[in-house]
Each structure stands twice: as C-alpha cells, then as structure tokens.
Length: 405
Image 1: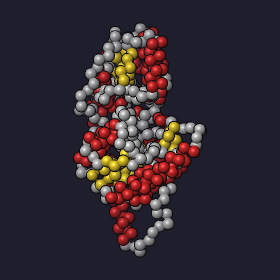
Image 2: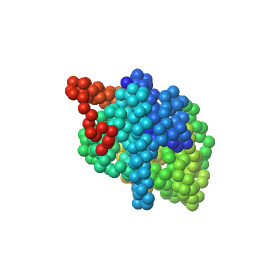
Image 3: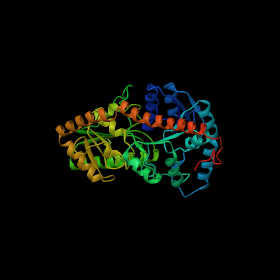
C-alpha cells in the first residue's frame, strides 16, 4: 500500500505533533506501508526529521485552513482558500504519479489533502489531533459546515482522543470517527542533562511544552508562589520555548514573587526526559489538550502527573490512582494537589509506579499501528471496490469531478 502523507509544520523546533508524525511514518513503514511525504516547506525541523528518517519528500507550498480567529482583514481567509485549492493541483498530480492508494492528512488544520484526493479520485483519511478552537483558538477558513461535510464524506477519520472524536462527530454528523490514542515512547537519543538547581526545593515539579498562555505555565508559577508563601518548599522547571512576550511575562512573575532560586525557565530541550526523571511531580496545566503527549511521557518515567480535567487528558489519567486532576484555571485546586503529593512521598511513589505500568500497556506502538493501519487499509479497499463497480458499468464522467464540498 502506498500512502501519500501530508503534514504541516515549518517551525525550527520539533514539538509533539512533529515527532508523532515521524513516529507514525516509521511504524507504518515497519508494517510494510510505503509512506511518501508532502510538506509545505523544506525549512524547519519537520522536514529535517522526515528526511533523516529516510522518507521521500516533495515540497508543495500550501497554507493551514485553520487559523486564529480575527475580525480584521477577512480577505486573507479567502486568499488562503484560493491558494490551497490551487496547491491541491500539483499535490494530486504527485499522489497519482506515486501510485498512491490513499492520501492521509496528519492534521485537520490542512484541507489541501482532501481537495487533492477529490481531484485525484483517491480516498482520503483525516487524522484529527486538535480540538481546534478549544486548544488553539482556531477557526476554519472554509467554514465549520464545509469542514463537517468533508469529514463525513472522507474514507476514514481518526481522532487521537474520545474528546476530539465527540467534538467532530457533532460537526460532521458522522459516527465513523475512530478513536486511536497515540503511541508514546520515551526517545532513545541522549536526554538533556539537568543543570539548573531548584535551590532548597523539597518537591520538584516540571512542566514541559511550548510556552503559551493556554499551556498554563503562568498558573504553575502562581501555584509555586502560593506554596512557598505557605511554607511548602516547592520548585519548578519550565521546559520549552515559544511566545517571547509570554516568556517575558513569566520572567516578570518569577522575579516579582521572589522565585528566582526555585523556578527556572530552562528553554527548549531536544529530549526533556531527563527533567521528567529528576522531578517528583509532572504538571500539565493546559486549558485543553486534544491528547496530551506530555502527560504520557510523565507517566512513562514513573511520575505522578497533576493535569487539568479537560480535553483528552481525563482519558489518560485515572484520578487518585495514576495522577490527580483539577479544573483548568483553578490555581487553588492545583496548589492543593501539589500540596497533597509534597506531603506524602509514599503516595507519589505509588501513583508513579501505577502510572508507568498503565502507560507501558496502553500506549504501545503495536496497538497504535494496528488500529491506524486498519483505517488506512479499509480506505484503500473502498477505492478498489469503487473501481470494481465502475468497471462493471458504462463509463461516465460525473459533472462534479474535481470539486470538493
């Protein structure tokens, strides 16, 4: 089976979405799938990771179809739509030249793959890894109604959590969305060494991910400040980079609360697992995570995770057994959860051990690949069935050929 795989990333750093995409390509290749990749740019870490992994890559410039909400310059949305429809023409030609059986879009934030699949008369599979509005504040350039119709007409739809599946089932009116939790493995490359001391901290916390207000790093800083005020010697590593203005606000909050000795902004780390291992508690304070790779990574190193009860996260954590949950934005509840674990080392150890045992079984590459491969194989078979039916009937060219929606 030949699959044209499309993703969108042009960043200089590789976050969870990029690494999940490359891991997916590798796992499918190990099962005999010939994955060919199309990216919008030769710049950025995603292109580097894909080429280093040995996959054929073509570059077709296209733009995301889901973007930040804005009432200014609405003409930009129409310009992006036109650009993406035009970009689908060479993409369809590439997929046909490769002899593809399926076009697979690694994110719902791009529509070019679905348009190209229609042009090339190929089945299309969407892998939805976002809550769109809830986690990123995006809206669809083509409109939510049209996106729902495309999802309903696709040959397969995969969601990385039940929360995501439920959201898009309402949008598309479709009950065919398959929930496939990501495979998560600790990376084999060298872990970044922990060089930043947290001073006199008796309980060390870590939060890892892109710096952004929606990721909740400020709430984590506020929680440490409150705990210190109570006399609880808590500390925090903030691993990641991103919004420079938000980072400046974090710096200001750390200084204003006299936390420079116990809260450290350590920047982007290629492999932050060393910080997860060094910590006593892993924090995931995002307002909404579609899945939550950082949550599972914390579980895999045997640490209790304190995370928000939103998005797909409650599907990963059994509250009170493998971690603790709290309402997003509720700093007082976050403080209470950290206080609970800080006071009871045996509870931390027991939760961490239970989390590790669960994660090692629930998020395996074999389970993930079996389920994703089933969707792709079914999609490819739908094309063969259509071709078989067409060969038994008089040839005709539908008036709608090449159009989407």
